[in-house]
Picture: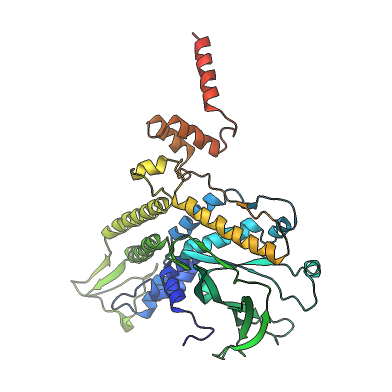
Length: 456
């Protein structure tokens, strides 16, 4: 039987699938702390040598770059509420009560979804004391807000098919809260489980805490009812496989990134040995077995066969290691580009890369998913805040091109070589701000023709 603080099997499977992505995104210091999880120890390699190899291994973070590049396309323009007046718009300037506006909040939720294939947005509000009206609650800032939940914060959920649709009946998350009896200057925290239950048509919240950090059991410390008629948690998908289930879209890039991590470690280790030749003494006795190799020192031997040589590694494999690292980096870059290419129609990869007018690219699909999730969450905020007749539509930027990774010189070369049309070339120039938004290619063509006629 799963306890309130235990991770469900479904969540555990998603955590394991996304762990390589999340670990690489954390950066080199985090990866070095994981040691043998991703960097195997060689046979006969002692702990000291292995630790030295780990310390000299650096991370090329292709996964994080791919994630940030994808998010950067969507958040090239901020996510905004269409109706920029009224109470809801004001709430969106600090949508989580932690200082993030709607766009910054959405950016974090979207990046978490790219890493795991799914993240969650929860709408909550502080408990309202008995007798406090909605108007009084607004005056006290007891207003609804959004909470961004990565998969690592979620413990599990339950759902039922109600009215022919899946409906959450339970949702559990792990939080860190201030220890109730901590000292005045202490920042000590304890773990807390927040469990939401749908009971008799209303959501009930129960909080569970440990007595102390050494305790393995969580006990219920609080319970309160809400006005909510549904558990207000909405998923943001980038790798949906089912209701509240997903696969991480960057899994293949992470696999290449881990290969790069290991090859780089091997190359650095080999380079260190190649740059550190060994002094080989033949027929020379050393008192005490200690060798001093420094200026002002000399070796003496009466042995006619004595010799002093340097034993060096040729380093022939270092160049091959460098080639393999470059190949892996190119593969990661290409796979990141593939993730935002259109999946419809019959065309080549090159054709997809230069066709900016496709409307069904994976990145646009993810942007639509984010838009849907935000609008659902904003609708819940409006309902909880007593705001009626509110338009919760949001604007999410989707007018981007898969040529965004190219310089404009690259785009010009593609046009000159006939790889893209004049219309695509002009559209890309307008998208980058090189030409004005009201630029008319047909009018410009007429002016060009008039100019050329006048010169004859």
